[in-house]
Image (cartoon, rainbow, N blue to C red; front, side):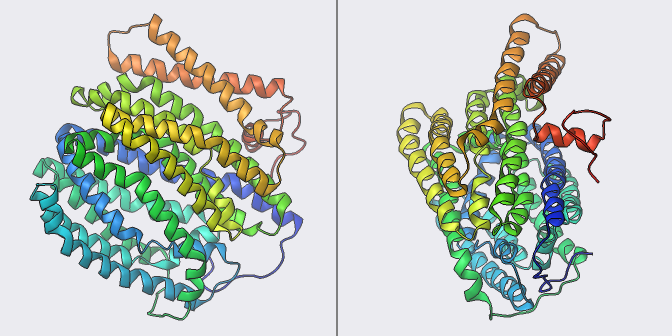
Length: 511
């Protein structure tokens, strides 16, 4: 059973405990991946059905309101739960103070949404936005009452509970949203789906964890010292992500924003549903090793290798099969989105391989480093975004995303190398196999595209996907063999499979 809030051990970990915790990097990542991939699988099925029942304009309308809601929410997004994970010890006042702030801000945010509903509808010259914002205000109130005790699932590395907490509400809200889409056949299905998901999530958080929060203000100053930098970081992330959507919605059209919203959802799959859950799983591990540089570096390199091995082929694969993917799954009305989707997928590849770095700084109690890195990323993006949007329209935002993420990779990796005092070769070794295998995979898929033309698009799509998977795995294992079976992602997989005598470097199976 997970520990109750406020009950933390202060004992120094032994070497055996460190080894066990390192294993949690993989087991926790697997559970978080299962969580996100399960949720995303539901989301993909939902998007496929909704894309055929609704229009790009419906998606664009909801994207505007969600962006505005996110703008209001970010001022209360102090990530107090992250502070509770990072701190070595917590007490009941810490948890109660975090919950109290979330509740008060939920009401304040709801009031703001109500007050700006009419001006926003007037600015976009769409009266539908006013009623939608009134409903979204209720979501903010529900979010504030979420049980803060469930943060202990991550803190205690209890990822089975985390999987259950996220998956069950998603399944229920999926059924509700899809049912509403058949009934309303318009944007209200998406809006009420958001409300139902937040309501179910909040209720289920109290079912999952016995902690019952109370109003308290004692620990707010202590938590804010760490979280203020996370607030600034969230502001930067919002501007980078949502402000560009608001600009597109005004400069172009809700339909164009609908293409962008769905294109980002698909193109960012590797980052949001592979890299992010891995980072969330390893953050508590980093926090435990914040005073142990050797174990921290080992955990980081293992995480980088795992992230790159999964996100690089996924991003390249989405870009390669995008035309068939959109045509088969979404329908002909979404084909204009294909070039944008390809650019966003490749941009996400560069972002994903560096996304874990921020959690190193958070675990070390230096969130300001992550803030300044993201601020630099924002400056580079908007330096490209404004002119490219003007000259190239919607495709310009994809070009800006790809250009800015590619330019920032070397800067971001150089900073983390100096921070951890890692040799360059150690980091390069984590990327050799996924990069080489990813490029050969792209060549293999391209070869199928120019030589094979099956009569059924779905079969052609499956053939290209299968070609990519087989070629990537085959090349990865071949390079690993040439390197002498070094420790890493592949090594850990074969260890857990307990294949006798393979790989040769494994002397004994993991417990």
